[in-house]
Image 1: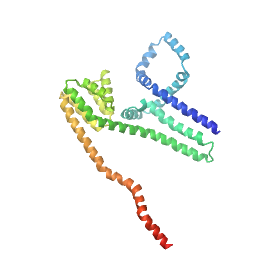
Image 2 (image 1 turned 90 degrees about the vertical axis):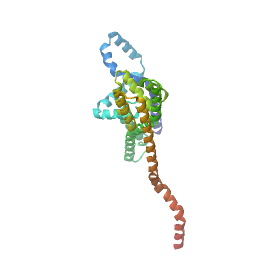
Image 3 (image 1 turned 180 degrees about the vertical axis):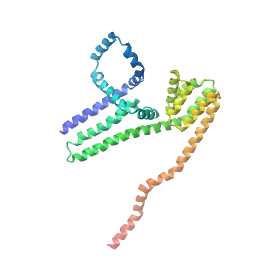
Image 4 (image 1 turned 135 degrees about the vertical axis):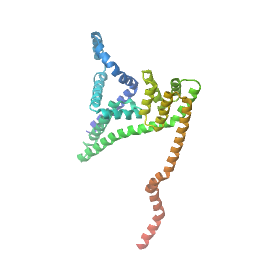
Length: 315
């Protein structure tokens, strides 16, 4: 029985590693396919001819097991997970994934599917590994349930932590980014070309957000609409303040160079005040480890010999 469990665990482990490698290799292709599919699905369904159907049927017979069985099953699971999600909850998850930068290229359906399947997988592996050899079956089931709940809540925590970390990176990159943007505008470049130039030189999450806004403008959105959407999808107070000033200056015809210079000075001042605030909070935060770890050992070292001498005298 133990050998069977070892073989089963090895098979699941190597299958998971192979799937992760395959996902990593085809990540860009699947991302493009996921973005283009909603725009082409109606056209493909209406314009398919009989010859194209025969070609696709012949191609389907020659495809591998992964494309014929595994991938359609995965797509059906994604659609099922997305279909049962309420619209408001789906929009909230979309905003959270946008703020986190779409980790691992996951969409809302992928995130819901991972949040559902991973706890079940952990619970099943726990039962398969420990239930046959344990005398207390109920305790094993209880611990497996705790492991599944831990994975479920850790996935949500990871998304929130990823969003906060990305927001910190955006706040950290803002002064240098807008300084370079200001220099490019003063050199005679337009706002769009200056943004494209700076984004190509600085590889930060802020550059990705502005590149996304430039792509929206290429697809037909106005500059104001693209900047408003950028301001709304990034949970950073600094960036929202700067983007509000840029949108207002662009509408009223005010020179962007002066606005960017003023906003950059304000950002650095706010970051300096934030750093001082964190430094003032450090002594208070240090009290917790001191009370829990340092003071008990200090009392043992100082009062331990006294207590030992008193006990020896009474004995």
